[in-house]
Length: 116
Length: 111
Image (cartoon, rainbow over all chains, first blue to last red; front, side):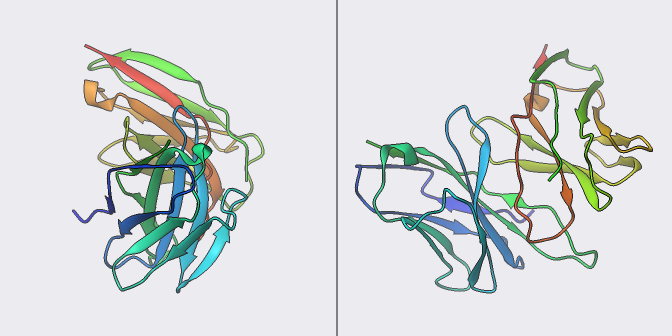
């Protein structure tokens, strides 16, 4: 069964450093998302991406965040200058439009980001 | 998006049927009800979606009464591997919509 993959599984970085989290969505999917989950808290939406542009972003997704689909397979989330409060599990998800106009979002296993 | 209310936690034993009810009193006409499952340290996984009456797949059943103000996710004969957090989401069925997760129901299955 096709699946969303994410790398690395765990990233440790120092405050103020830039990090890039990578995702490979399912190959025929057209819509891409990033979510995050701070330990013990809810899964929170960050951004959705379609047709090489951001469709929607949350208040969390400020100027320190950016997303890119540099080629036909990867989808990346960049945090320019990490803060302690960016420590969380980051999930990539993808979905594809079906004939009925909706299908579920498929989530990757996540990248645990630890900012020290 | 409609606000949902579900129990914070539930306990069960292997082999039992588990029913998790979600309340969504202000559900809109074009809203669908979707359930996701999340195992520890993993991403959420779609379980089932419905609009009204009953939907069944190989994993679960979803019961939705006529007024659609609540729904019940039914897991038949749970096993230890069903221990997870279960989320009820209510919203329009559009492909670009973000998912809004609540705190979910933490199901613990005991041997």
